[in-house]
Length: 474
Image (cartoon, rainbow, N blue to C red; front, side):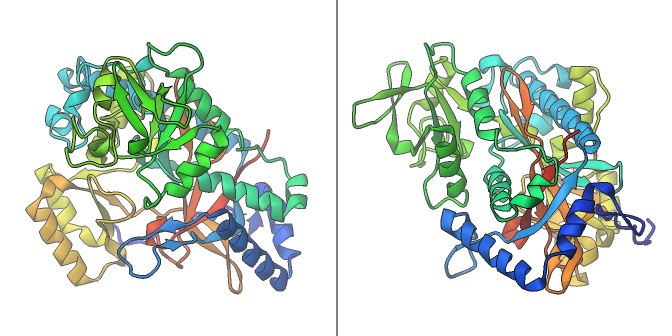
């Protein structure tokens, strides 16, 4: 492998010239005195704190609640750039749902030799309780968060898929709200597509997958593990926006063929549960018997068509990092189309030849746990010292099936406010795709930014920040 450092694509610049999409922002930045910028940054932090936008980070001691750093310099996508991403994300969400419907039923993709059976059936996210059940409209994953990175003007790659309970959409919405409140003139001078329709689209999506036994307007609830969960703010925020109840497991019970919610006016039937708890905790009679978060008997009602669970139990098998390598094949197999968005080239350590290559080139690769998330359990080779690399190599040799590896991509950089002005920092993007009767995206997503110079790790749990994402109107 070549050790030549790839060039970093700066999304604001074309050579020395400011790209047209960023010209308004460049003028805005140059006209803002440093004192005003500092004042506005403090104002943004105060607004985030006032509305309670915090992120829990465990295991660090002290108060686990902290603000996610917010960068005021927006990231901009042209209409043409967004068109490609929009089409590519929809295509991917459709294929992932087709795969889930298939592997819990006829398993045609396995029988056709396109995906090894053991990668599916031995996967810890594969739920036997979902075999043979077809959820309403055949949709297993109702909210798909696709993590995208950019390496050049026209090069976008999918880093991973999130098919269970992707978080962060509250930041997408609040980043926009705060920017509009602080810089109204900037929005008047730019034609930016809105994202505030997300809650309405989400409610429409959830209602469109109401169960067979639902009569009339479906009653939708959000099931949260409670206020100690790191994403609790988001759960309550979305419940407020949609005008639905936020419930914990103890607020629900099963009687007869239905799930009921306890209210001061007596039990009320629940038709659709947008769950924000993991499969293992949903129903102690079906999964973990020690779970205090779920609803005993819920899976029995679900399988009998009395309630819809979004996303469906078992959806996680589609976002496993070993399965990720086969998504382009899923698109060809189920949709008869070529993938619009490319995967990052990936080595599977479960394959002896791939594993040998990975171990020989660890200092140049990014290695991830197959089931890992949040930036944990990974090695960024070029940023790691020799002893870290050697200890990680021992983990791979001990359990090769648990790891995949990818080249260190030259992630694009966006202007980001730093003490001396602006400087490029690496970013990724998570658009949120809603799958029900139709497949919908709002024009935007969550841009995460690695605030440390040179860092490629954008996860909030690892010290990354967030910024508003603008999609320009045609």
